[in-house]
Every structure is written in C-alpha cells, then in structure tokens.
Length: 177
Image (cartoon, rainbow, N blue to C red; front, side, top):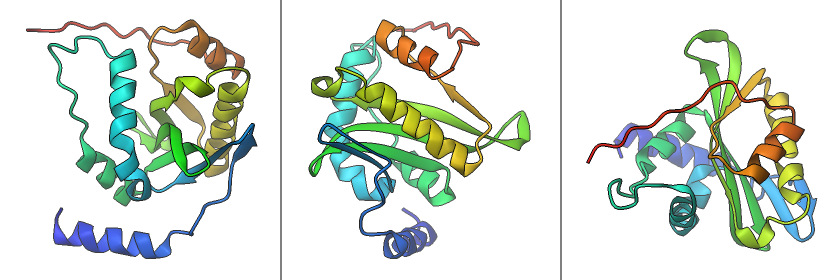
C-alpha cells in the first residue's frame, strides 16, 4: 500500500464509530454498515464459500479476490458493506458500490457488487428484510438507481422481484481455456 493510502486508512480507522448502529435486528441476526478494513480479515473464508457455491469454471478461473481494490474503494468512499452477524460472527455481506454512473454522472447509483448469506440463515423472510433495509440505506444516501447482477436462482430472483427490481439485461459469457 502506498504511504498516502496508508495515512488515509489510519485516519479512517480513528474516525470509525466503535460499533455502527444496526439497520436490522431479526431472529438473533444483526445487520449494519461496517467499514471494509474492519471486516477484511473475516472475509476470505466467506468469499471462498461464496465462490464455491455460485461460481462456475473452478478448474479454469482461479479464486483470487482483488483485496487492494476493496481497500481503494473504501478510501474513495464508494464501498458500503452491509454486514450480517450472529453475535460476533460474520455470517453474511452485501457489497454496495455507490457513486455516479459512468453514463449518468449527475445521478447517484449503487451497484450491488456481491452478496452472500450463510445457508443456515436463508430460511423465512430474513433475506428479504435484509435487502429491504439495504435499499432504505441506499435511498438515505441519495441513490436513485440500484443495479444488481445475480446468478439464476429462483429464491434470489423472487426477493429482488418483491423489492421492485426488474431484469433489464442478460449477461453472456464465454470462457477460454
């Protein structure tokens, strides 16, 4: 990490509240916005579980998250991580990237870059309530449009549909190798 980035991260650490206010409390689960640098050490095993669960082409495409990019997005003030915990244990995350869109610079957009919840907590209405709390948080930030790229999964698609999202594009893929 470059010295300037290290200094800015130190300032961020000093200014962080000890424990941000919960956005949702439900059935022993608590969600809140947490700074990336405070949760970074907890994320690798969850990211790997997420990758094993939804990614294809494990034999061709190596699991290698760009941790520096996440730190830089935090320093830029565009990364907003909505965490889900049971006690002190991180069991889920929603990564929101918030800023002007490349084609609509005057309108604040959010992209749900990734999300995951431990399968043990995927029953009932919790996931819907969590995403609804995430939407409310983004609206309070001034976001006018949120985009989410999701894998084909009936339950996830139903949650987004109930929240008022609609499919607008299809992603096509070609893997070389």
